[in-house]
Length: 348
Ligand SMILES: [Zn+2]
Image (cartoon, rainbow, N blue to C red; front, side, top):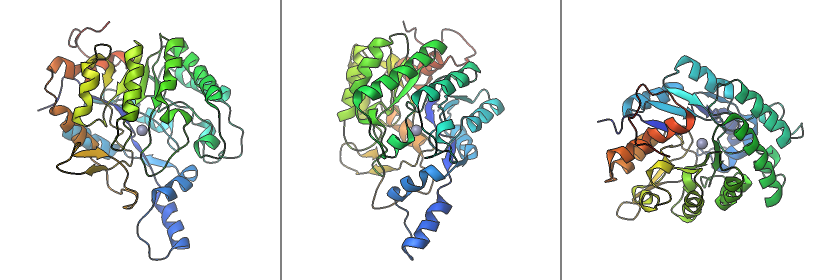
């Protein structure tokens, strides 16, 4: 049975990095005979690789698990154009966020100075087309900072994030605030381990919805960042949590918190990212998402829809609350088309 009336995955990558050939070249040069590809090697070649269209596998999984729609996100090496092409081909199945990719292009990387001002101009231009429904994944970031060639202070970074908030306010779209990383590589997004910085953004821009990518649970067996995200979400009406990588028990705290509740949770899995699920039967949690450094890069398409929907199926909550988390909140925040009115619980 389908899990809800309208099932929307709010965090999907329909493009996948074509890292294999570049990594294999390195492997051949450096260590003949080694078969496993390391995450640390992937991060070294990331600025040089592009992404290919992986939508055939995505559509297969959407049909398999009853996922009606996906919110597509570009990330490093991925393009807004590829996402938009998919939205235009399947308008009922996809909507897309945008991120300024100009400064991250393979040819430009390391040659041109990156500024948040230029990134925001690009964002403004993209959003002016009316073809994108939000900003993400995460906030734009100087590639030098991202790849740890340069540092930025908390104050300077928050000032940069404020510029993006202005663009979001102008176009009345939500922004995504990325949290955590997947263990295999640690990208230098300064705010990723600092969800509490979002207090500053949320109070200065109460009219702009902020969605925490991963809701503090990008990976690993901890709740540290989840708690910080909950603290921000409980304090501001405009802050939301994406929960697709939560194991079942993690849903209860936000659901029980009278200042959060189902109306602030959005299902979003990061489908398409190279994030495997680790299993430790008999322990709590029995499974959780994490890149396994010793095993090297995961090469198959991890079944995140199946895993994540199973975590939610165990929740003994009302179907109306489940419908909000699975798609009703996404429909409201991203202004997605739904054929009928009054099918989701009203939210102020
Ligand atoms: Zn992602």
